[in-house]
Image (cartoon, rainbow, N blue to C red; front, top):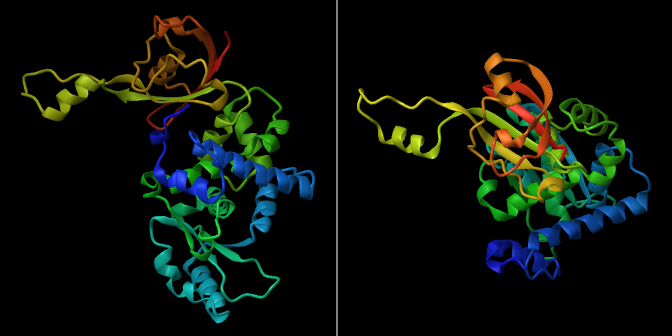
Length: 335
């Protein structure tokens, strides 16, 4: 059983407020609680063809409506609309939607009986636009986990500070799980995992989702094992310390080599544990190294992990492409 201290107290409290008994794994218990709500919605409304459709159904069930802000004029219009309806909280809408806030959900205090309890304002201005789909699901995550106490307060999404806030991090996890819900997208898979298959699913099931979020989350919840890796030029820890400390001009500086800067196994590939790890040097014999050195846009191939480490001789299939200053790849275990 996992140690209780391995989870933030804030998450244990949320689980307790929701009436969830989770002595060792509150995050998974809360995800299970949300999954039960999603499945109940699907059972009630019937077959769901796309993730975008699921989003609309769940938003309706948790009683929120989305207001999309594409311009400052949109912001002014939404503010005026709800102030006129007596919703005093909207007086602060401009300041609430600061540079680090992508979305905010207000509980309506002055509404008709037939109107939803909440309004979720999604900021799509400038660089925030690609995150609109994920932001919607983040706001829904808050509503899926509201308790009798928190139903009296407003819920906000803070992009930059959420990584240090356990509850905001949990909301992101919930958003990723259900924004790319396996029971919806798994039946639509028509081929082995690939960047092109992920893009096809995005266009078909959730076109509002960004390409980056789709890659991260479709891979994470893909039904078969896969590792998502990225390689860039870098130094090992000893070399980094040497460079950070500074050195005499006559001392030769270490040259950067191609290393894994990201190694993310999906849920289906977590056992057994992969022998690849962050900052691991990419061997010159690897397809990833060749693609980077020769600047090949895209290539597939198979290779043995024995070229990477003595700990494994497993065979993997690689689908790799140049992106930015490095190489991004899908690694599929074959044996």
